[in-house]
Length: 179
Ligand code: HEM
Ligand code: HEM
Image (cartoon, rainbow, N blue to C red):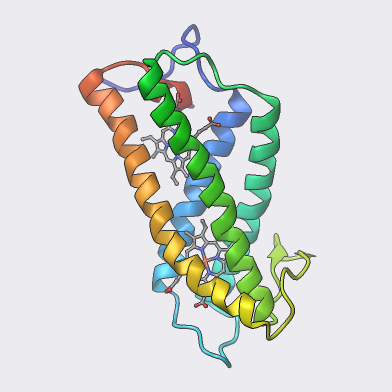
């Protein structure tokens, strides 16, 4: 049976749902590109897959900025979960937001420390987050790679929970975020 949202069930608003799935697509692309792009050395140029990682990354930074602003101005629909589960899901969502902001910012700082421009839609130059040659910016690249795994673990937990609600508990939690 196809899963679809019923208009009378409480759901996230259309903008929140659009931004959620846009972020899912951009983050999925970032993992695939991040794990397949060539190793980066001192004289590596930001071309090919590395350029894609920076371009998709800039789009993700802009989308996350819009998402945080939207989320602060719009409350989610009332929860149907028990207080304990509500606390766990609230904590997971908060951590997802936090790591989704920190990982891109660290990548951006690392790109700046390498003297690489981060451009939104290939045109608008985002400001440098660290001076070229900064050792702190370089260290941030290492933390970026490690925290990407933390993000991966959080996403696995989150997706597992969404599927658990849909197929085991059989409630309408997943439908709250469907198109
Ligand atoms: C959630 C979003 C992101 C994910 C999941 C992600 C994932 C990754 C992964 C898996 C690597 C390879 C790490 C390694 O092999 O050790 C990487 C490297 C890198 N990423 Fe990202 N990335 C994201 C966002 C960004 C953004 C927004 C930028 C910049 C605009 C960026 C810039 C970089 C750079 C410069 C490197 C090379 C770091 C180094 O080797 O020193 N990333 N990223
Ligand atoms: C890159 C992958 C993903 C990330 C980073 C992510 C992130 C998030 C975040 C931060 C929220 C909280 C929204 C808010 O309160 O403003 C959320 C909610 C939600 N996500 Fe995801 N998500 C991802 C993938 C998925 C997938 C694949 C599914 C479905 C299988 C899913 C289903 C849901 C549902 C149902 C909610 C609403 C939960 C509720 O009603 O409280 N997410 N997601």
